[in-house]
Length: 256
Image 1 (cartoon, rainbow, N blue to C red):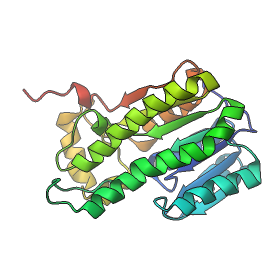
Image 2: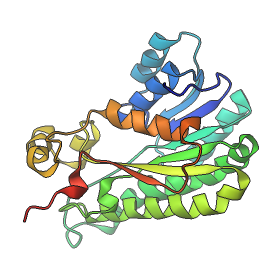
Image 3: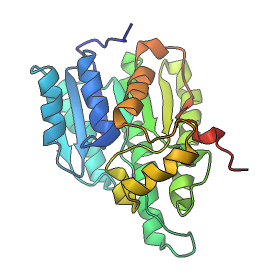
Image 4: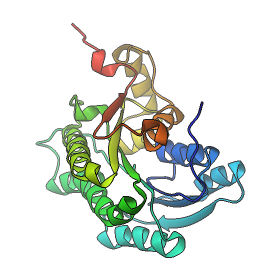
């Protein structure tokens, strides 16, 4: 049986223009959510259409811009509260990665990765928490299996995702007494536009996944989004502080 959500709950999803964030918005809608704040630095028209194709009564706050800017994060929070007066679920999904050896990359690139992946997640979580506490809601963050296993030429990215996992555990411990659950999903290779933005072609990753992932392929973003939505649902009511691997078995892979 699939978890359903009360139509009054409000869900914020960052990085919602494509990939896992877009599919999460669709699945939340299929399971009863009718109030969203969707945000990305890219256009959100297709995500909005996708949700409305499921339920034409869905209401939106749409915030387009650079999530590394504190004022944009404050806008996301403020516009959501102004329209809906509550936040139940925060999905920290926006992410950034850049390919390169640590010694070859600039400190500006390092800062960009951490600003998107870590600082934005921490700040937006802090903004939303007083409201999430009121409804005993939850936070789900898209991390990565790179948090557990460094990926070649993705050292800064791997570091940032490890930080997200520890943030998840620390915040879960602090907020458990307040009735707030905090979890993360840790995907493996997933066929999203994020791959190209990092500097890896989908073809390269597809070929690699045939041998490095025991399941023999990359994930479809919908497969990861289903896990994310489950974690956010009451079906996972006893789950907090968990960093859930959904990686096609990559962590089992041993080339020796």
